[in-house]
Length: 118
Image (cartoon, rainbow, N blue to C red):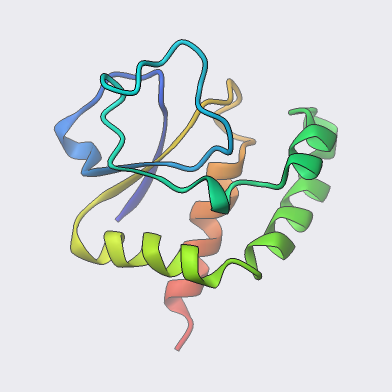
């Protein structure tokens, strides 16, 4: 199972393996207290896309489209996350304030769809 969660929320046993999927380390979060199992910044949106989006809700549909196009080029990194999810529960961690419109939402959708393909 793949879940998503803000890195600022408390660590829970149900998180399983905690994978940070942001390009930048979140502000104010200690690396020792974050409980991050793996930091896969390679699957995060490119700097150009991240800066363009700027978490503006009206750009969300286009951000999703562009980010999915970027993810098509990252199969090795996606395989790594999928392998982790095959072993235990995985929680994709993100720092964005908007819990409905962020890269972890798109990444989880993409991984779920990818796993269902024959």
